[in-house]
Image (cartoon, rainbow, N blue to C red; front, top):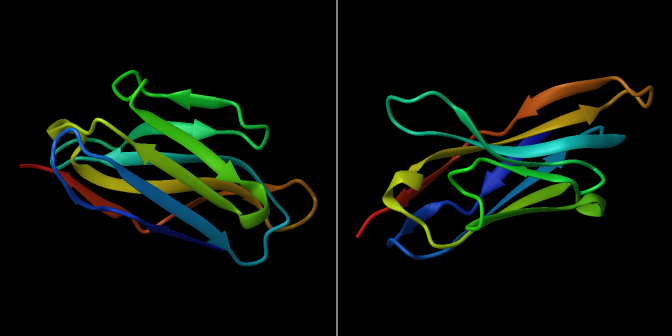
Length: 120
């Protein structure tokens, strides 16, 4: 299973970016998917997550600015980031709990990360 993230880049404060992450490989189902980020010198932290039933969870620092969504048919999770701030600068990683066995045995996978830089 591979998780391929894309959509990062340089954006000015107040701007928007949309991240995408697609899972590929021998996949029978995906339970929770999410986005984490790691800023220089800081620990990796949860940004947002979404279940297969589309229940969402957000870090307090991004509530009201970021929106997570998913397309189950495409095994893809999105992160719409609006009103970006310099403190949102980080490498963003996607994550997913994937069943490759068809027996309901889920393993956790990480994408390769995509850099988001918010700067004027």
